[in-house]
Every structure is written in C-alpha cells, then in structure tokens.
Image 1 (tube, one colour):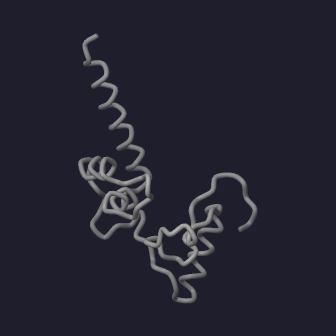
Image 2 (cartoon, rainbow, N blue to C red):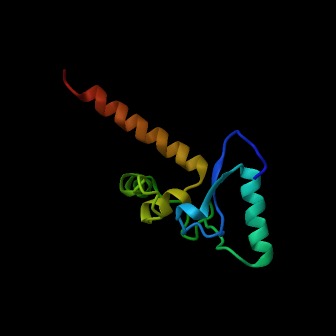
Length: 113
C-alpha cells in the first residue's frame, strides 16, 4: 500500500484471516498491515486475530512439533496445525526451531556410514 519493497507480510483485505482466498490476499509492510487492522477495528469489521495471544496459553514443544508436521503449507490452509503455529509467540517459535534443528543434527550424527 505504501510502496515499501522490504520485508512484506500477507494482508487479508477483508480482515478475516480464515479467508485465504487469493482475491482476499495482498502483500504489504507490517505498518500498512497494522493500519488496516486498526481501520477494521475502528469500523467494527474484520475478525480479530488471536495470533501471539492465544486463549489456551503457549503451545508446548510437543504440540508445536505436531503442528509443524501436520500443517498443510502447500495450500496455505488455515488448519489446526497452522492455528497452533500462529498461536506460538515468535520467541518460542525460534526456541522450538533450534530444538528441532538440534534433534535433526543429533540424528544425522548417529547414522553409521
């Protein structure tokens, strides 16, 4: 929207993150995405997101691993796995990704050649 060319996020033009139809998606900077969300809130439209503030608390490492292996990234589906991933704060996603990488690394080193 503002012409930024740096890191762009996916914006939901109708304010509903469950609507993943291509005509509802656009790229925009984080600032524009936030402004769009504020505008939807101001007029009482859209659907508030629970990303980063889930009602059930932070998903455990086991829950996150399940979500990563079951989320359908190819279709960008808003499925149960995606909901768990989005409900995990960025700091925890980084921590969990490092743990997963460590597990993969240790498995590779245990394979006899």
